[in-house]
Length: 291
Image (tube, rainbow, N blue to C red; front, side, top):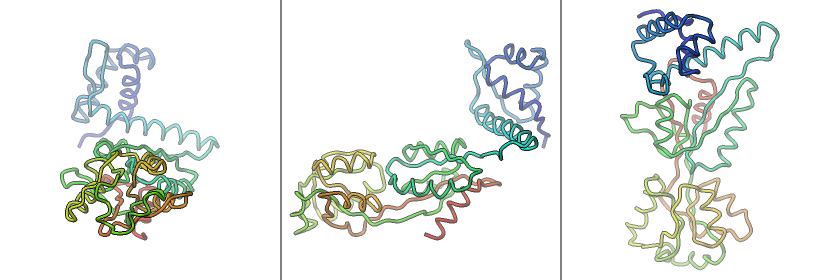
């Protein structure tokens, strides 16, 4: 395996910043031919092309974008090292966490509160749908993701179950009469549903199908906050897992029509297998083991 020239890597970072060999050469105060040659040596060492030439200048390849993240991290580590040697503040490290939009916000907030107790760590939280988070993990844009299902085998990701909650059908008092005769009482009743393709949606559809019940799916959305707002307005009933159901029932007029037997909302930690794991990912996996 060829040795990596970190000087070349820093040159690559500057070229990527300016998108031009000439402008980068001016910034670095080196000749453009020499700079171009050093980037070529770096590409040979890494075994991949880092740039594509476009009309507007240089554009990073997919591999180039990936390597730039490492170059930025190495550059920042050097700055932190010099700062610490000269009596500066201890360096902080970013932990990038992804969450599905349907994960209860109170649970995310509780998790964040535990993770940020370490003053050397900064937390960056991003929301996305399942496949978007998988792509972010595969591109190493995030360290971990909290999702409603584990990864498929061909995704080259690892997972650990983080939590499992029962699911209740909640609404306001005008739906209280539907408690009697449940679940057949739900026939043609308005229900605010999670979006198609989510694990909870699949479970709910199966629940209704085997019982030959045909509710009215009045609104469908990924956004659990919007689901709860609609339910509070009396638009329909909403299936909520803990802790969202507990929050909803704590509001004036919120009722539990019924617990939905056999339906559970599971949350999983998805992450890439790497030689060195982020310490906050280890903390999350330890929390999952205790839950």
